[in-house]
Image (cartoon, rainbow, N blue to C red; front, side):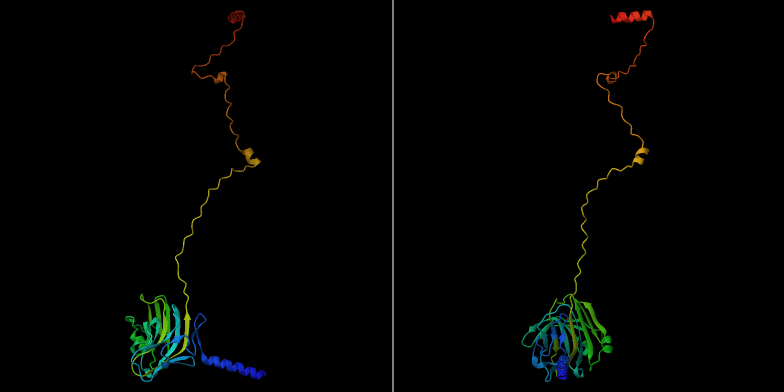
Length: 283
């Protein structure tokens, strides 16, 4: 019984591993074996063991794309890409839109693949070349008939493209749309086959910088100063306060106005005659 259960678990694990569904950064499925979240001319596209393969055995007279139904803004994406026998041309559309639903033609920025365009940013029905990759870097980095590591990072209006670890585009583009679909390209022309494998996709939530606000000054009320507290020892050492003399009472000599003349003080006279004169004056 235990052996049977173990075989069931292993079988399930092998099935899931073979499917190799690609998860986006938000946890939702970016690619699945049925390509349920994608639209296009499905006769030219198939999902094989975790890889997306596009082929045109008889060639095409128009460009066509496998398009995501969901729109994306900021993201980073990596994959391995091969053009069989180095034939044909392909690319990955970013922040784009479908402009012809019959042929699934797409317009918008394209991370280019093929010929002398590897690693360039091209405007598919969007104004032409946006940024040409340096030819010397492309010549050294690209393996024309083998799988190449390709990465795309798009934040705001800044796009970075790398091919086999070499940066081919790293610049700002003012006309970059804010969001749009992801789409894989099959180019018009002769027969070709393109394979995208080991696809990894992650949506990015970039925090926007806001200007720092200065703190609002708080209103403060002046604090009343408390009178100094003196100890008994300090009070004893302090000089005595001068007490002003009492105000003169009305009717007293000191309350009279000063005339500026010196006061005359008469000494009492002694003897018989002076006393006699004083009595006479009183009478």
